[in-house]
Image 1: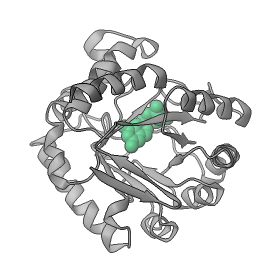
Image 2: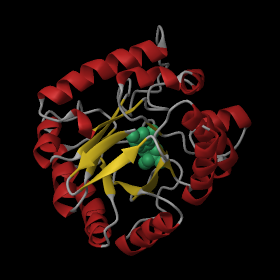
Image 3: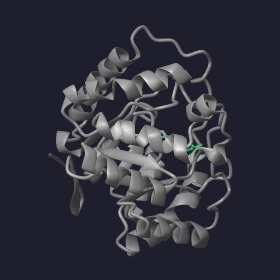
Image 4: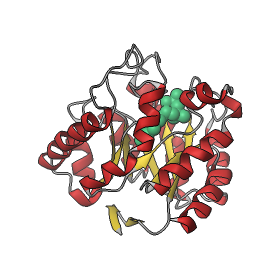
Length: 275
Ligand code: HH2
């Protein structure tokens, strides 16, 4: 069992899989772009996800899908802050999905307790200090390249070994910046600079990341490698996602990042009983 601390609380890992519900307040996210624009709709959707079993809500104001264009910080702040304020006011645990320190700082002020940074603190030189100062928990995700370039024929020698080496370096940097070890969660970054075969190999060998001794997050939800394997469009990948969630949990995932919270909470609760 391990504990990840954030201001005013903690997440316990190892007993029960933690469910993170995705709330994209973006016009262009790959599976739900535009669906939750406007704070009222976004807050209602977040409440539904909590009712369906989400332990926390991951609020994002910029799509990271392949070839997506960056959004200015002010626009990202305008999208996420009103939503975070209202969720935090309802005592809903919120993570902010951003790689910009200015957005993270505004989100922490609004009540977000966890940083989910797909660049693992490398996207903005001020990010590590911002997270350390706020004493938030951080999800450190592996990505090869940037969202604009990452799917241009990604190549690895041994994909798992390379990600392990990346994590070792990132952990050192985070620790040096003042982020304590009991605030860190690792994520191998399914779909971020990986071919469909790389994603499958990461999931088959997920247990190898246990050697780092930190909680593991995984985000497979509705992603294109599932669509590719099954020939399913993005709105028809729930069963495929379920298989990946179950396999990931059996191989040591502690946190799942999902869109279909009701279904994936069932999968997690059932798979937890089979561990
Ligand atoms: N995947 C996405 C975004 N953020 N964060 C973590 N830690 N792990 C992931 O796998 C991950 C993530 C992409 O999914 P989504 O948010 O649905 O789409 P978009 O980036 O287009 O908004």
